[in-house]
Image (tube, rainbow, N blue to C red; front, side, top):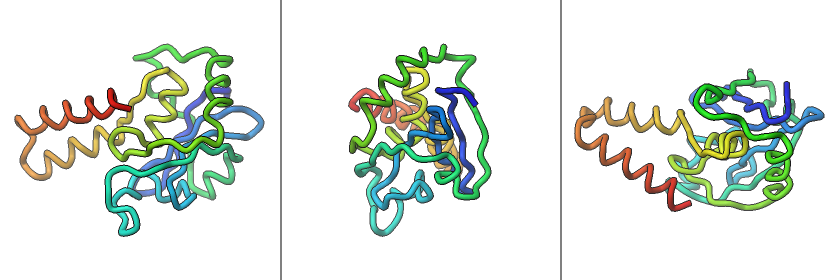
Length: 159
């Protein structure tokens, strides 16, 4: 594993994302309950019924974050974007450490956070797939999907 590698942690219904920063440590965005295990779907829980809340940027040992769940290095956007130099990534890691930031299921989740650190671009295939499946499942893919894509783009710009 190299500094700046994106780590995908399989949580069953969703994947949690962290960024490797060396010495077995990762940085990741943790939801309000202090757990990365609730991650992507926590916005739908009874204690947090909205699509956004506050999250905390945390540095922990990868083995503790994975907590027995399978994980892998998955820099899936390397063909689309050039990874930023490690000194730039680590500079942002130092700035972000311990900060509380807006967490948004569709616009600023743990995957958005990690892709931003690695590439300087904030993306989440998991959120995009969720929206696509939501519209396909409800038979609303056509024009409504265009509106939803535009709404997600607006959320990204507003952050």
